[in-house]
Image: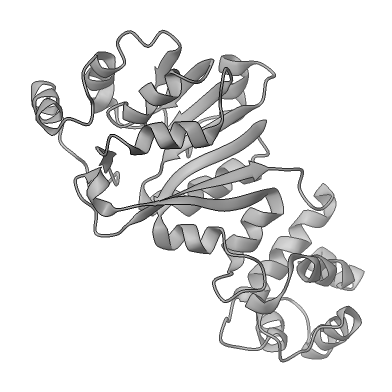
Length: 288
C-alpha cells in the first residue's frame, strides 16, 4: 500500500489525476506520517462508526479505517474522486460521499449509513469554515459521541478556553453548552501540503446533553451574544445595547444574579450565563 505522506508519490498522484489545490476550499493535506495515526488513536473509534469531513487524499481516512467499524468520508471537491478511488482502494469499510457538510441533510446521512448507532466525527477542517461547520454539527443535535478535529491553533485556544478566562468568547460558551472540549496536541504548519501560514492543533469534543430545556435555549444564546457583543464594555452596557431591554431592567437582572454591572463577559461562568438567561423578565425573555 502506497505511503500517502510520501511527497514524490503525492506529486505524481495529483499530476496523474489533474488535481490542483484550491485556496477557495482551504485545502491543506496532512503529510506528516505521525499525525494521522495519532488523531485516529485519539478519536477512540475502535469498531465504531466514523463520519469524516474532508478526507483530502485519504491519509486520515486510511488510519481511521484500520480502527473503526465503518468510515463514511464526506468530500465537497469532486475533483478528488479519482484520487480517493486510488488511495482508498482496498479499504472495504470506507465509503466516500461527495456532498457539502454545510448543506446536506446530516440526520438522513447518518441514518442511511449508520442506523441508530451514535457516531464520531473526525476532520481536518479548513480554517475558514471551522466555526460555522462546528456550530452546525452541534446545533443539529446529531447522534454523535465525540468530535476529534484539526483546527487552526488560535481557534483551538478560543474553542477550548475555560469559562471565565480571557480567551473565552461567545463561541466558547456555545461549544461548552453542548460538549466538553479539550486541546489534545499541537501540529506545526510544516505537517501540511501546501504549508499554511499558521500552526494547528487537534481538539476533542465529548458531546453531552444540552444544558437547558429546548424552550430556554434561544434566550440563553441571545444573552451570550449580547454579553459578548461589546467586549471592551461592561456587561451592563453590552447587554443593554444589544438586547431589547432598558438599562434599568438589565441592572435589575444583574443584581438578582449577584453579578456586578461593571463585570465583563469573559469573566462569567457557564452557571452565571444560564442564570442570566433564566432571570430575564418573562416578557423580555420572549423577546430575546
